Length: 71
Image 1 (cartoon, rainbow, N blue to C red):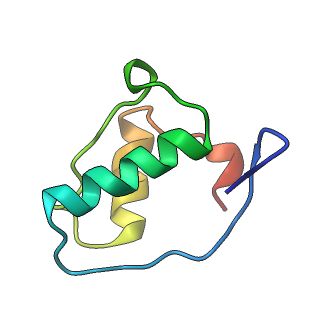
Image 2 (image 1 turned 45 degrees about the vertical axis):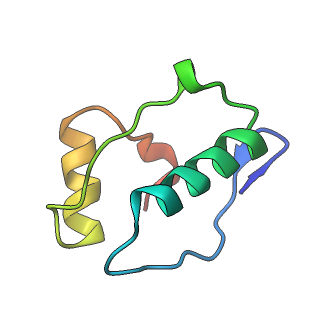
Image 3 (image 1 turned 90 degrees about the vertical axis):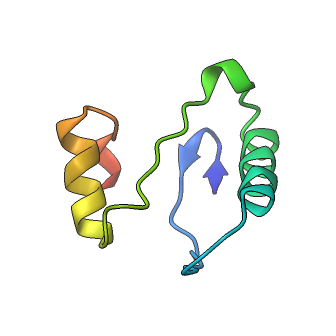
């Protein structure tokens, strides 16, 4: 959730499997709510990385995460 241009923590839902169509709807909603155009949006597949902590570490090594908001 973005408030006054600042990311805020909010609830997250985890699912084991999600269809491409469902994911596309989620991405579309995120882009709409954050006023992000498709050319500003990069999709990374983290499905092969099993835990959130491992995903965060992967994103850090790829320089794809703003660690200011990660504790």
